[in-house]
Image: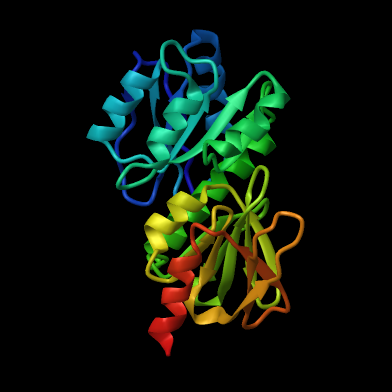
Length: 265
């Protein structure tokens, strides 16, 4: 497999768009850093090879994305104008999302990177083997999508693989401090993202029961009232099929949950 290095050309699209190659967009406002990216990418090995585009800011990056397909964007956090976090959210929310790896000189940006739905986070200076891991993760995501991981499949990037999880195995999604817990009958997984996005994509499968939880409709078991305590108000909780757990039901979502049980009667 031949690796196509990134020649020193003016900022813009570099290399042909050939089928099977991982399309990488480098977004970095620093000329010296762009030179380093060329060298690093030229040393990586990815199935099919690598071709890339280069942009100096978020505006130019979006122009390139609209005119050419990209699988992955390497985005530096500190960009001129709109920052890397803003660009990352824009790229991951496109009709054909672009996987984003955020890059920073400061390790403390890692938590914010995953809040922006980044697939990975790299700290400068980037080691070639660490960049290799990020590229391979993006390639696995691309392959999984091409093999039919669509509306009924959840892709969860992990350090050494991409987990393809059928939605019919998910019992609930629960928002944690930095991530979303994906609970199945046997396992729990962590993924970047938001409940709002999951509900928008998979709302026909899941029911919002609380601001921090989506539950699979098939797993609704019983709705229970918890007698009023110090608050003076009754609370409600939901027992689920497939797991021995209960989830709180918010007062706001209680009518929706009751209606779901009624629809199944």
